[in-house]
Every structure is written in structure tokens, then in C-alpha cells.
Image (cartoon, rainbow, N blue to C red; front, top):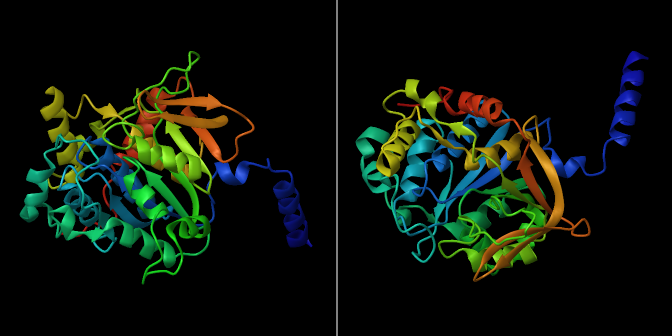
Length: 350
């Protein structure tokens, strides 16, 4: 009788849940299946986002289905992704890369070439992007083998990889077009992008991920045509993380990336830390809004190919949502993320 009563209570709670809760919060009873798409080489917070995602995987809260490096101007980004995955004991995660050079930061700010070539230190098997599987083929393969609406696709860099997937044609991997695969297999797209675009004066901002470095036309297409819910993450500019890596082993590729980036770009150290834009996108993908984020409503992320991007709030627009940080949470959020960032790998392999 007690079991029946408990079941009835659970059913009533579910029936009373807010209608949009399913979209805003992840499933809590199983790992979130994630494809992480990065512009590794441009900033150290990409490496931090990977570290946080691996920690979630260690805790059983995420499953890393695959990794995409879609910003080809740094030809060694895929090598860093491989080194990180191996450091965290997951050498078999599929990695795809863009072979072109028309998108991405032209400056190797984290000295990815030096790190990717140091295979003795980091044990990576991929050095050049062309050593990895071509990004669209891998994306199609990963989606074709997934359950319907099971994949969270997270972009913490530019949008070329997801665009190429969307416009891909049927092939030997799948008889479905890219649009059909995305419609059928992806649950939602989470984009780190849109920092400061929601402003009273409705100014355009040349957002790094959505607009700059050759990504504007691809972002515009995706925002207009992506058939699943899309969330734009604007948070982390004052959430400083990185100091938790001070105690990491010298062989930690993530520690090395942060150390080198901070010194190369500003003569700073790990104690000075770095904003957490990309880490927060991964946090939202796994934990939802949690204690630190808020749903700022639906609207349109307008992309002007000349001026930049801006957010136009509009409750009539469906499946396009701006996620922002709650006020006054910088320090607490940083402490929480630093705990994830600096955690020892549970599956580390020498």
C-alpha cells in the first residue's frame, strides 16, 4: 500500500511540474549524452570545459559520445583534445576535425603545436587535425548510431561543424540527410555564445563564437534553421577559474594549457585565473540552471553579417532561449567550477 501511495504522489508531482521544465533541466536519472564541439587553441577555457565534462563523466552524470574540433586555422587543436581525453582515461572517445582553414582564430594562443607534438609528455596519438576523422563523417556516424532525441550537442567554439552536419547529404553512413539526422537524433543544441548581446539599447556585438573568425554565416543559418531547441549561454565573464589546477600533476595537459595560455597572453599565472565561459556551457548541459543560472526567456539571436549579433526578446519565438548567470553568484560559481576543474581523474591512465 505504501508503494502505491508513493507512486501516486510521484505522478501528482510530475503532473504539476512546469510545462517547460523538461527542456530547461536535464534528465536526472541517466547520464547526459554529449558531443562537445570546440575551437581548442584559441583560449584555455576550452580545455577547462573538457576537464569539467570528464569530471561529470567520472561522476556518472555525463557520457562523452564524441568530440569535434571545427576551427581549422590552428591545425593542432584535435591533438590537444586527444591528449585531454587520454589524460582522463578515455582514449577511445571518437574525435573529428575540420580539415579546412577558413574558420577559427589564426593565432595559436595556447601553443597547441608545441603541446600536440610533445607526445612523450601527453601520450596523444593525434597530432594534426588531419590525423582525426573528418568532422562531418564522424558527426553523422555518431548520430546514426544514437537513440532518437538522445544527444546534447554543445558548441564552445564556432559553428562550422554543426553547420556542415546540418547541410550534409545522405551517404554510406546514413540514408538520412544531415537535417533529418539532427531532427531525429539531437535533443538540444547548447551554444556558448551571445555574451552581452541582451542589452537595453539592442546594440550588435561581434561575438567571438557566433560572429567572428568566419563563423557569422554559419551561425545565421543554424539559428534560422536548426529544428530542435537551442540555448545560448551568456555567463562566466567574472567567474574566474584555474587556481585549482595549481595542485594538479605536472603531467596534466589541462594544467599546462592554462599555465601556458595565461603566461603567453598576459604574463599571468594560474593564481590569476581565467573567465569560465565554456565551462558554464558544459555545466548547463549537465546540471541545467542549477543554483547559478537563470532562464532569461525566449527570443531571436539576430545575426547581421556586417555588424554582429544581438538578442531580441520575444515570447512568441519558440525553441530559442537565452541562458544567463544569476546576479551575485560569481564567487560561489567559481568555487563550484574550480572543484570540478581541479578534481583528479578517476580513470587516469599512464
